[in-house]
Image 1: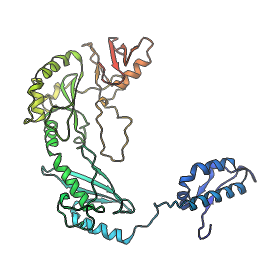
Image 2 (image 1 turned 120 degrees about the horizontal axis):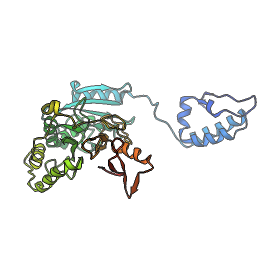
Image 3 (image 1 turned 180 degrees about the vertical axis):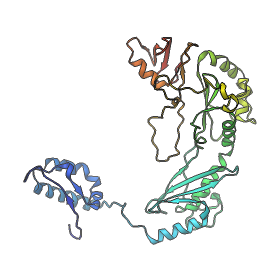
Length: 386
């Protein structure tokens, strides 16, 4: 093309024969240019009888791409003004808070400490036209962090987000807004940290580290083969949780659930979550440190897959800290036979029962028999089983 030279590589099945689509290798710049036209290009490759026809077709597609005004921005060089701006903003934020900067200087990760001494991290992915376009932020918070554009013309003056003025995006103002969010979740984390310190937490996984800060839910062991799942309102953590579920053996759960429901009106918003649970259940919540050798039955592996923790499925996030409530990742269905007491993941038991000719289904529930003792057992297809 006039003023542009692109290199391609391809092979043919035979001299003068059709092009092998799998062999086509394009110059990176050409590949980026043709990205919106890849379906049309693929169709033309498959229809071209020989190399000459294909190259003519390719040239036509390239002309269309250039005429459309499509410009791929991935290879745009970083300007000196961007580096100067980034250095000024990082200096204002504080070099001691900088954790990392990627090779392209587009993703910056910083640390922060809240009023209770907890350490947090914020990652900011800046677009190529920053500060005109909004960056993408990754923060371990219970609710999505969506900062606002705040006076880029005065990026270093405000000491709080509320003091900034509307305008372009500023890394400094984003950090201020993030710190405001950290302050807003102090009460939630106070309740959850206390519960984590005194109770046996089944979910989220605490085997290697503390639960992610964005997780406003807990599944707590309350007795052998019995647990309680609850999810707090991040903005009002002291109120009665709207999502409360008892999970496990019905003969163990029944008296605990009955007492809990009878005394639910005594819930105190001035008390910690753990204190309310212990008062309503009439017990001190069990913990690994207190149980010691008596911990049998509190955490067990699935008798079908032989794993205690089943990896969550269907979740995807670009943020590594991302975590969604998934109380079903631990065995939650327990055989009613006290001599058996084997535990099963709901998904494992569903697949097992689906393969049994004697299993039956009524609405959203599968009925069958325990794989080990043949005691009747059932599981809901869309929720908790028993």
